[in-house]
Length: 112
Length: 116
Image (cartoon, rainbow over all chains, first blue to last red; front, side, top):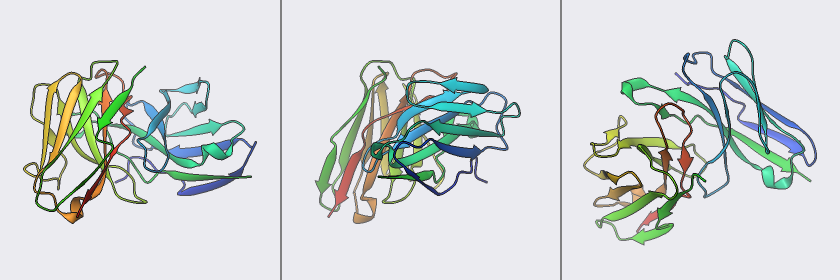
């Protein structure tokens, strides 16, 4: 059973705002929600992390509703360099270890 | 801050040989390190979790005798692919976590292994 569900792919244009929503219906009380970005042949890069409500940093915002069963990553004014795969993750404590299990991610393509 | 390095960035080896990949946390002490592998156009697959000073915990289906993991210090973990075969060719990525309460992991740049 997948921990998170995201759209497989999205398309956008330069300068637009992109919102990627992730479902995590079985999120545990202690789980944080973390988003990563990955370019081809590179390791994932941490974007943002949150527990509830809204978190904002210099690159993105993360919106989390009160029930925490979903979250939305918002990328303001995307550029071509934002073309990448975006992963939404929550913790997995099976076996006593807190680990991150990657889902399929969302492949974002930004067009000129 | 929170930089993780891997060495080498790529390696080509002959079938049957062993290859060691190093993962280092450069500016923080990593209580836990993780090893992933990624095939082209696929997501990352967790292979094992290692805590400093203890044996690694392997995910189901990952052969512990083939993928040897050593986490000798709080800044270094190594993955050794023993008797490598062409099907072991993949992109290997490590990550490190500073503490145990937050889920934030910082990833290395990855190592491309090609077995001929």
